Amino acid sequence: MKHKLGLPLEYQQMPEYFDVHNVNEKTGAKNALIEKLLREQQVKTVLDMTCGTGQQVFYLAERGYEVVGSDFSPALIKIARNKAKDVEKNITFLEGDMRTLHVGKFDAVITIFNAIGHLTKKDFEQALKNIRANLSDGGIYVFDIFNLQAIHDEMIDDFSIERRGVVNGITIRNVQHSEIDRKNGLLTSHDHYTISKKEGEPEIRTNSFSLQIYTAEELQAMLLTNGFEIICQYDMEGNDFVADSSLNILTIAKKKT
Image 1: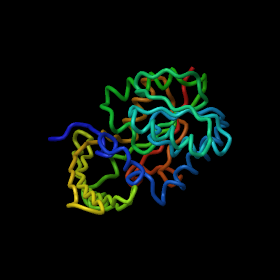
Image 2 (image 1 turned 135 degrees about the vertical axis):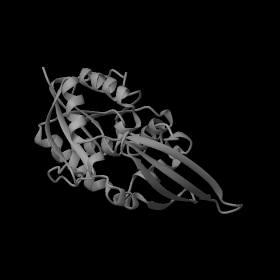
Image 3 (image 1 turned 30 degrees about the vertical axis):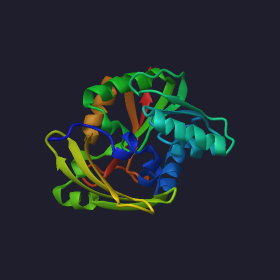
């Protein structure tokens, strides 16, 4: 693969466009599923270690959870803090790396929307150790990642997307296509952004990045090695996980004591 693991362009250089790419008509349903799973595990306190601009944090806070959000990106944390100020919510947002940040002890840690894919396998194991340190005894870790076993060659065409949104009068169009390196478990996406302002020529930006993805068996082995046991796995619609057909693996793992 030519492209190292990385981040989408709007995460690195265009944080003001982050929500255009990451918030859509499916976001509410995904947030509701996460909340349902947390409720079933009787969770009351949550640390979102890859919170972005705070979609899950605000959703859970509105439903009575005590939530702290953290993210590696200072720019996204700034946006999240401004959102909290705008709606007069007293929510803590911290800058921090999921591999090293120590916040406290929580009933649950979440890292949603393929966040772990931006880490190498070695770094994910480091993150698992740190996540465990931020969990109370018997606490749970909830995360999702693309399912390597289910991504067949013909499915890659379905990964092609086109998004369009408007931020402060600026139109952002993003066209993305992907390719799979099954041997190394890398899903590489190529983005082409067209940024059109009211005046002047459109600005073109391009970016490529890879996600480290896993089979369910790989995740189980890594979790067991790092002090977790899997409680259950689903797809992102909340259906039972099927290894050769579920596009995503949504995992609930419990901290072993």
